[in-house]
Image (cartoon, rainbow, N blue to C red; front, side, top):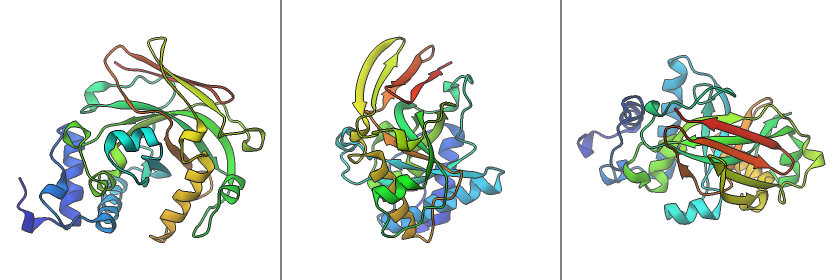
Length: 263
């Protein structure tokens, strides 16, 4: 265990990257480093991403975490957060999800945006956010906390890049102008059995509100959402554990379907 007096941003990023690579969970960093507040946690997240970039990965988007009440209530957290997507997290369609690459993966359905133009806060509204969107897609995100039993504070999970692990986005692209995303319905199924349902309203009342929140949050750190980037707006339902052999599917009322096979 790292001595508390030795903790800093670089050490925390290294510890989390090692946990991810070695597929070993650990206790929350805040238990050993009380100085890990939210601003410092975002510095750790940035350092973690910079180390991934140095290893050859490329930033391709952003994601929101804990945007639905279901997730917030289960995690005992009442605030959404933002994180960074790299191409190392992306899983192409029809590529199986290899469970031996993770610690304790869970899957959740998402409404996904692909951006048409740059979106920079502060002051972004849901309307201006949606105007910056090129297309909307169905998605599934795999999360895999580096903390034991998914137990963490908000600062811990921000530092851990919001438990990011993998995501898959459907090829079907729908114009945002033709949708009522608050009413967009989704059914999450495992092995053909529907286990949960939700609508887009589960994400901050409307996915565009989540997109605006992301742009305004990133602006506090001098960042923006760039053209062509992917934005995962947050899990519509609570995340479900995945087991070998599972077929996980998300069927949307307008956006179509997306699926994963766990091996």
